[in-house]
Image (cartoon, rainbow, N blue to C red; front, side, top):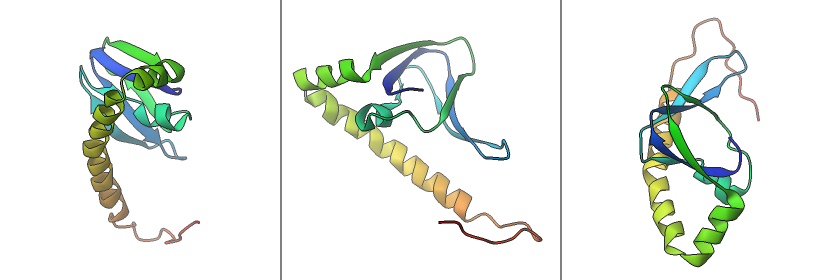
Length: 114
């Protein structure tokens, strides 16, 4: 996904990350009406995850420049969009906690990289 805001009109989309070993971690399953990719629009950078339609889907997208112009014309769009981040951030916080608190299998080195 590039620096665009996407809105799922119909279908189902999963957003996920892949580990170096190819293991998939699903970040979110999007249903119709839900936006995604907001962070990349505001940051002006590519989205740091992958997406895949799980069924036939229709997706509307706004390129970053067009979305920024919309916000300039109606700043309340930015406030509404920011409100959508809060549940997502809470969900990702729980996901990070769950993943970081998992036990490391015996025999695997317990190292930390910086």
